[in-house]
Image 1 (cartoon, rainbow, N blue to C red):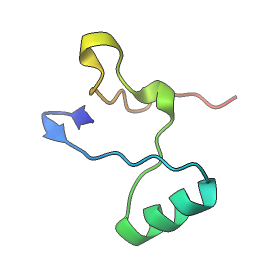
Image 2: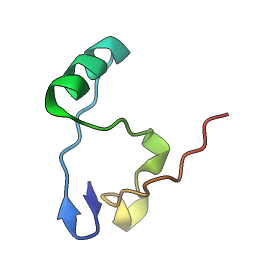
Image 3: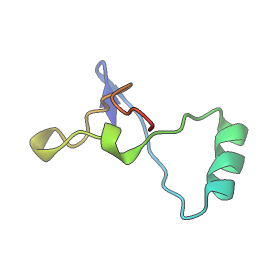
Image 4: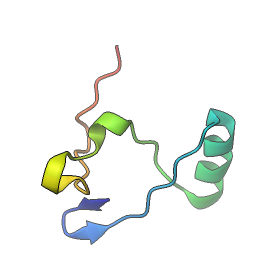
Length: 53
């Protein structure tokens, strides 16, 4: 993923518990899949674009 000309590595987990353990260990952030760019801009991180219902 890329934001403000900085590259970030993204990890996907099947189980939320595993993601939380990993996030806590490495000071990561959660990201909803809809925040990912689309098409030729697939690597763009549209931070703050997800609104939970």
